[in-house]
Image (cartoon, rainbow, N blue to C red; front, side, top):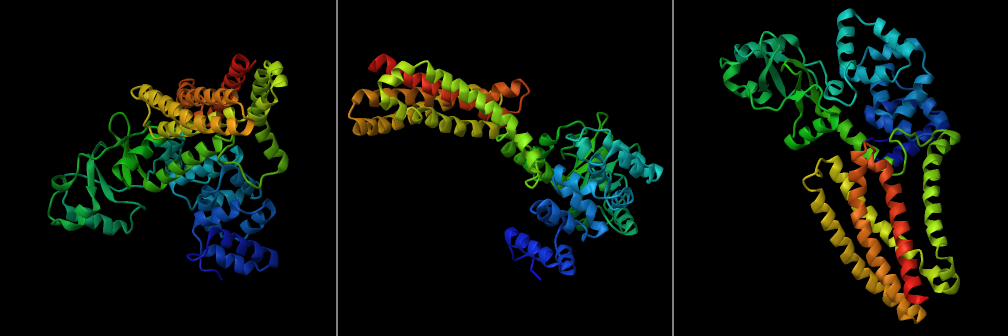
Length: 451
């Protein structure tokens, strides 16, 4: 059997595929048991639908819930379709409240009702309190499983309480301190609990300067707080400072990963939840929309070129060089666009520094334009023996790359103000701008200087 710590994902995928093909299902079961839920999820997403369903049948029921939470939405839905209601209800019994909230939202309505009715009243009320908050908020991320104590007791009392409890929730690096009414007062780090005199009062060693998270805070801001302060967990409170739950680093890592995947996939007009092995027709439908939009912008660029048909008919050299200017502008603009979208995602770009970014990128575009225009003009002159052609393409490059730098900043800023995802629409708009401006600059200058 493979040592899971010494093989690559590709080797593991090949091994599983070979095992499934050979029919050695006991071996497949042993391999799965040696992997973490996230690793099994990666395996499932790397397999075609038929083999994925076959592998799923060999996963133990107590692990299915955690694995379902790790796979993308589309893969999860295909697996859930193959499971009966009794199995889906049984899976819910092995999940923590915060994970259960995510799981329930992925189920069909009828199954969700069955899951809720299978719980005792107190547990159901706790789950419903989490489900009442938006999924992308602190309330949607928070876990209700936490340890609290009072400030007026000794550390020895807290230690005895923990021993009596027998276990602590995962990622517990601090005990949360509240008063008798549940109002948040501070935190007691575990290291303070273990290294101070047991007779010391909690109030004397607890911290009151720790950041708390409002239940309505959006998930990306929560992730940024964890990143900036190197947090493992943080308490969640309502507007009255009443403790509601806590958020832990494992949930924050999921937020960061999903945001990163969303940016990358959105730039191609896709969703981060798209299944690589989804049916052909479904994949085609999703991609055809953005292909259609791109075609429309391509026709716009062609229309611009068509306005200079007489120039192109008389100077064939221009047709050979025509694609260089929009191509260089597109690359320059994409570099700026990527930086700005990343800055927006990290909260680094706002009204206070947009103008500075605009000026900087315009200058960068101008300088790059001057450098590359000199190189391209020289090549054009040596190729065609006409200095005027070199002058035309050089000037057009300077214009288009300067505009590309400005557009790379302005497009995501304007799209964000219009509440449109810059990662989703920015590339299409930028391509249109650089193609149209590039062709107009090149062919317009050619008409003025060469005709």
